[in-house]
Amino acid sequence: MAEMTEQQTHLASLLKQREEIVGEINDLNGKIASKRELLLRTLGALEYLQQVGVKLPEPEEAQMTEETPEIEGEVVNGEGDLPEPETEG
Image 1 (spheres, one colour):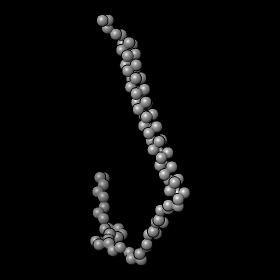
Image 2: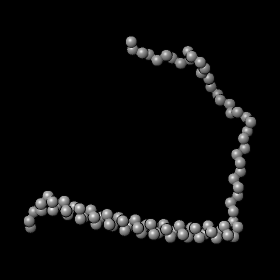
Image 3: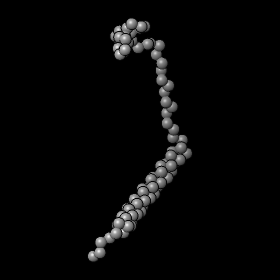
Image 4: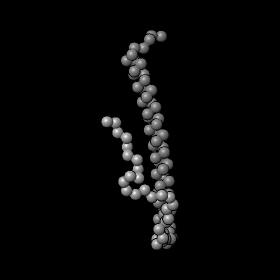
């Protein structure tokens, strides 16, 4: 059997890559069709429930408290509380 040239090796590699890509595209198209079908079923169920008057309860509003949470620990205020950075001079 004759040895392939560099260009023939490249051609063979590209042909293999093309087959793999076509396979992946076909796989993705199958997944898309399946998801589209699931979406249509979901939309149909939503439309049915809305037509028969099913509604979700209104979310309760967050109740604000007038209390401020207490913070334990020492509070650092103003200059001099933190050490000055050392500088080379």
